[in-house]
Length: 553
Image (cartoon, rainbow, N blue to C red; front, side, top):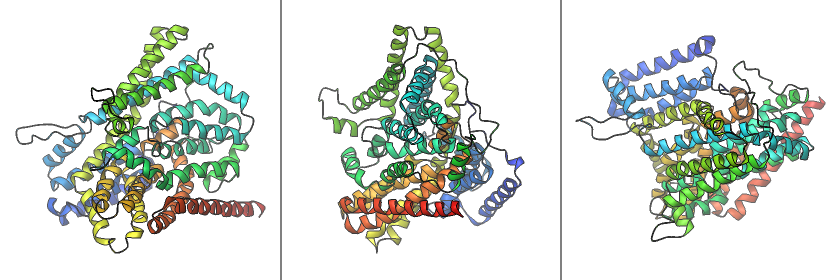
């Protein structure tokens, strides 16, 4: 994975449209100064302005860091009533956290223990990827796969299978699948855009239907008054976007369907141009892997990491305590942040022992890989920090209550349509903020409080719609951490990845929205899920026929 990868975007000054967009944003903020007060902003449409600014600038300027920070500044200005000192204090509090005699409440993305655990986990993942590459495990697996995979479809299906197997966390998925499968897909002329899509589509969509994952623990934590993990498992058949995304990948590979900008990328790949969109910032690392590395040097660290993380999570849930407990309850009560951080450290220790015993790496080489992995993850850490801070801004402005009011006041007359409406709202929020977990935190408590006492079955469908919408928006968003990391893992231009993936994601989203209407009426996944799969298959056949007609013409 490139250290610079696709995080480096064209600057604002190189794009006249960016200057116009920046001027419009400034004009909106100036107008807000004269027509809003801190009180009027709370729980109103203005609470979503920071996210709208961030996503709009990101789409226009193609620059992630400055776009997120512009949204953060806008949030601080709205919260403080455009007071300079209040704005600075609020931004600092949201990002770092502080305490003084007038404010005993400590907040901040970088002082939050849960966030720190995720960042530690991310750093260890980066170190392990660097170690597996240095030890020759990734190269050995790539060579083995090249010898056993004979077709382009086989290479794509192998990428999908590997992505589905790495289900414990989407970050780990993005970091490993790209580096492992890139040599294989290159050999069979799979475009980098298609590889990035396969990586991205097997990250969050797979994690959100895997009971043993950091995502399951996160979602469970937002469900109060219920067994969170048990509810998560019951909701899996209703998580249409995730299930249809996996079906979509298999359909387009087996049926050889490509449409939209992806079709051009695949045509160019057949001619030898795997990138289509050139990017001077994309430079693949030229590592010198150990010639003695074997497939086991990749498989064993990955397996040990998964096992250790699972054990770490149930340990935090009290599974090994004096009272014991069953596995489901322990996982439901687990602290994913602590569990993943502890588990990853043990996984790293097992990898150290394995490589030293096999004499694949010296202790010095092993330790040198750790800072290299850390450096590779710095861009992702920056994006996460800004994204978390932006979420803190929207929370402080009452965005959660504003969205709750929309759902409760405007949709009460047609309950059967609520899952579809919630799905679309989740798509918008996750697309705007680039984070699924923040969207879970906003929507799931609202859904539980609205339906827990009146219609438990509809609550189940609606919770699935929350998760599906959040994953869909995250999947499409150019400022999503997993979207950016998928581009980096495939060494693909980030904007090209977003533009080629978007038609595929929108297709699945449209089918999912229709299927949620069916689920709202039937409240039965046995009926709604097959209906959705049939609609998806028919839609793809129609798109294939249309694409074929264009080629003939």
